[in-house]
Image (cartoon, rainbow over the protein chains, first blue to last red):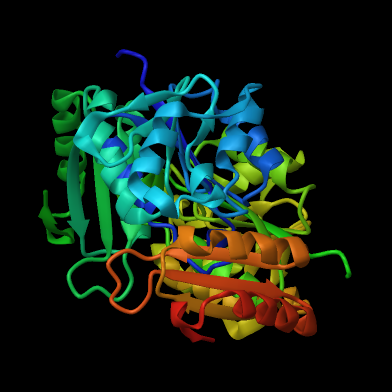
Length: 244
Length: 244
């Protein structure tokens, strides 16, 4: 099997660590990357602190094919992502002429220092114009710098998502009406016979329909089907509610 | 001001990284810790891999007053949190006599190897019996090992939450009907005058009522009120929808 394409996400935001806002960008990106065949290996939520961002970038950027950041790119004092990423890469922060011109065009006489701050990028950044958005997406090396506001995060990622396509995972699901502990031995035997299978089991409490959702995944569809049949042959038919 | 009590959370789960399940334990714990006055400094989501867990424990356990883990403590092949935490601390995994007895009592003749796995803990663990739950919560050093299933995660944390009380943060909120970029200068001036203030601003798109939610926080209520009044005196009255 070819080496996987790996990704990490750094979420920058005191508002998430303090429980004021629930992070929805992570689960959105996780599902998108899965559908694209990219293996998301880490999600890290950190405060709006330059040195912490720099340290996270130094740790995750070389270790993954793609690194995403979410948040910290607005006009206020706590928007320090550009500075943090720049420090992590040993680069400067510059005011980008194209972005400055766009800000002047967009805000006109309402332009102020806070708004001009949004024209600052890490030196050496590439502006990505996919998707015809009002403002381009910022890329520097293998890092994609996305805003934290969920609607804009989604819009910007969706505009560039085709860049990340590799061969996707195939998925089968079994819904079982017995407790996880009753089928754990079958799951363990399945993974022994199919060591490359990605096998998950997720108990659901208080659901009238099922008690465990079992997921089987592989990039190799035939291998997945064999593993699925092997597990199904071990399960008592009465234990299976339905499959997908 | 007294030194803050800090915390970190390690979420262990391929199901979250692959986007199959959205992590709700993080936002729950973040809000709980905030209400208790504990500063959550990191949330890290990692795969079900022993060495990755061990590395995360080694990085986060000494750097925080309290470390929580979520997930990876069930009966299946991918439940490797105990092994990972043990490796991170340089300890062994043992089968705990009390838990083994509880499992035998609970499952009777349905006990199997998978279920017995749930009696395994890191050597030197303390069993916490607060809350009269069916099974105690596991603590080793400053690490609290919680299950990933959201209902049980909440139940277990709630049972032990009083352990973590320190002096809480006080909060004021301003809802503004203007864009964040229009008030960013006022926010920056407020933080210059009140450097210990925790100030956040969160744009909301497509909301009929307001466009930015500004939060001011401090453990010192008087300091908070002074900062709040200072910021309010700079904002045009027409820009403020309401305050909390």
